[in-house]
Length: 394
Image (cartoon, rainbow, N blue to C red; front, side):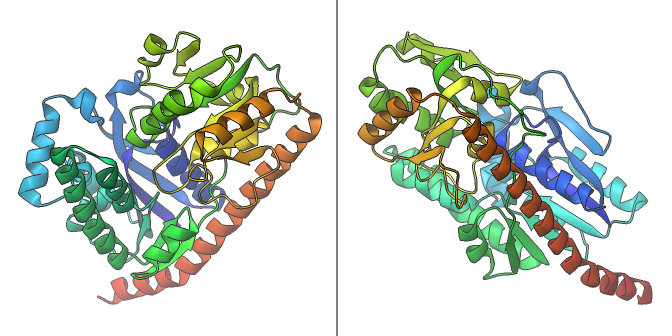
C-alpha cells in the first residue's frame, strides 16, 4: 500500500515526543510493507535541517508561540477568521496546500493518514475515500485541564475557546475517517463514538537495547521538552513540592530544551539542556523521575525510561496507557510519597535482572505494536480495493 502521512513537523529526527510517536508509527507501516511519504514542516529552532528520503519538506518555520513572536498574532487572527483552534491555524499555509496538491496530482495513494487533530483543516483541501486519523491524544481534554487549572480570566477564555474548537475538529475528523488510531484505551473509547477506532501499543523510541548496564553517574534524571506546558507544569511541581523533601546530597540532572530557569533557583540541580542520546542519559540515572500532572495520550519518555532499565518513579498520569509495567516502575502522586520512593530507588544498586526485564518488556511491546499495525492494514485493504474499483467505474 502507498500511504501519504500529513503531519505538523517532519519526525524522522525524533527530537520531541510527538515526533517520536509519529515516526514510530511511520516505521511500523514501513515494516509492514507500506510505501510511506510524509509531508510536513521543519522546526526552525531545531537547528540543522535534516530530511529523510521518504519525507517531503513544506518549509522551515517557527512552530512554538514563544519563538514565532509577531507571527503568532497572525495565527490568532487567522484562527478567529476561520473559527479554528489556534493550535490548528498556526499550521495553515499556502505552501502546505500547494505541496499537498502537487503530491496528489502526481501520485496515487491508497490511504491518507492525518497525523494530529491540528491538521484537521486539511479536510477542506483533500478528497480521498480512505482517510485515517492518527490521534496522539484527546486534545480537547488537555485544554480543558489548562482551563480548570488557570486563574487568569483571559487565559481561561483562550483555553475554553481552544478546547471547544479543537473538540469540534476532532469530531469532524473522526466522523470523516475510516479508522482512528489512538495510543490509549481511554482515547479509543471516545473516538469509537464516531468511527472505527483502535489502540496501538506504541513502543519505545529506542532502536535497540544495550546488553550491559551503563555506569550510573547521577542519582535522579528528569527529561522532557519543557516548552510544552504540561511538561513545564510537572517540572515546576517537582521542584516546588518534591525537591525540598529530598536530601541535598542527591545529584539531580534535568535534560531537554526550555528549562534554563532551573539553575537560577536550584543551584544543586544540574541543567544539561538538550542531549543527543536520551537513552544514555536515562541509563546513567539511578532513577528517572517523571512528574507529569496533566496531558493526554501516552508519554514517550515513560516508554523510553522503562526500556532503559533504570528505576522509575512517576505519577499515575505519567503511566497512562501503559499496562503491566515492569517492577522497576513505581507510582507516586503525592510529593512526600514521590520523594520517599526517589530516595529508596536511588540507593538501590542496578542489577542485570533489571536490564533483562527491561529488554524483554521492550521486545514484547515492539512485537505487539507491529502485530497491531499489521491488523490495522489488513482491515483497511478490503476497503481500499472497494474504493479503487468504485473510482475506476466512475
